[in-house]
Length: 190
Image (cartoon, rainbow, N blue to C red; front, side, top):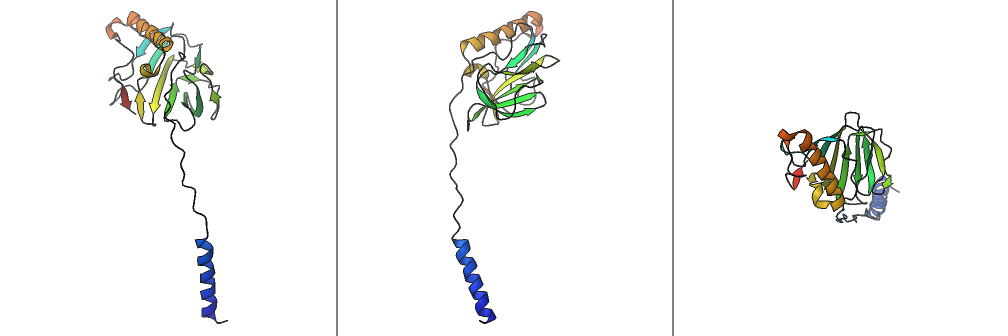
């Protein structure tokens, strides 16, 4: 066989082999749009001294993206407000996704000595870790990783009653900085 014939044969074989490869699977799993119901207060608010409502314009350009609370009882444990799967444990922040492929997630800040690990599937009320040493904690509900939502809209009456206790404590100890409600906006871009 001549060199030209060999080169043509090799090229023909390469074209045949590469054209027979299976296409990559391009099927994507649809996002889970199920809306969570926040049921468990993430801490006891009996020792609350400050409450910063969701959407408070004093926090950053867009406003506060979470409930933020300052507690005097730093010996208590943080618990999950809703079921979820742990996606990140970084410093004093624990993040959970509501369900596999869910568009909703939760972020807990001020968690000292986290007791959970990435991929843990947690029921409502599961221990996350202790409240931070400075007592400043936060809870956020996020949609599509970029829009923080007012948690009160997605919570049951028991959760909202507990948040009201934090607001009442804030108003008792800080009358000049009284808070009217848990949220000042419905949503805030993160």
